[in-house]
Image (cartoon, helix red, strand yellow):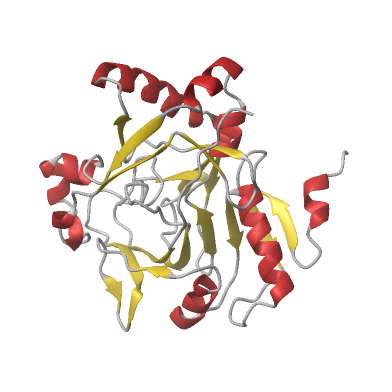
Amino acid sequence: MQADTALEAFQHIDVARMSPSVGAEIHGIDLSQPLKDEQFQDIRAALGLFGVIFLRDQDISPADQLRFAKSFGDININRFFHPVEGYPEIANVQRQPDERGATGWYWHTDHSYDQVPAMGSVFAAREIPPVGGDTLFAGMTAAYDALSEGLKQVLEGLEAWHADTVCPEVADPRIGAEFNDRLPGLETAGVRAKHPVVIRHPISGRKVLYVNSGFTEGIDGWNRAESKALLDYLFDHATQPQFTYRHRWREGDVAFWDNRATWHCALDDCFGYKRVLHRITIEGEPLRAARAD
């Protein structure tokens, strides 16, 4: 069997791929303890390479989760979710057994509608259904790489508008009514930002497709029909099985995904069960366009 040379670069953590295109598990790290500098550097590199990383069987407190997240940047206080009691930096992503609909059941990347989008999200699995409640991830580096050279040239000269009013919870009042209790900040929606359609990832240096069906409103300078045709193609392309990974949560999981390099989608298949995850959002940096070389 051919060796995975990408994994040989990690000297201070054990890494195992979860799929060819996106996702990796990291072993040998106890997040109840502060990270060593060399562990931090390897975890950051793994995030840039794989887009989303998972650490299983972590017995951590909210304070431990917050310390881990803060090692990667400042915290973005989420305005949509209820906070965890005593921890305003941690959003309580919770679904009660009788509640319909999963928050974020469509493909999206968090905070793309902000002028400076979030760098990443750190989730801790607190209460997980016995069945259902999985999350899908898609890798936007692999999705970009698989595009034709002609389409890459077109995309690298484009910018797109992103808005928090595009998502179904805001765009459709009937859907939004199902989420009013879980997402009290929906009434604050109305933020827009323009970003390059293809960015240069600040960690990996690779080109990444930066649009998503949850928040991308349209291509700057194109009419609605033109935008829809291109974006629908990109959305279908990027969610092909070869670019995705399905994560089955276990209590004690910590997931850390890079919002600039991945999409995610919560499967709406655990009605009748409670599901609780604690989310911390890490501030990012201005996106840099990736022009044709």
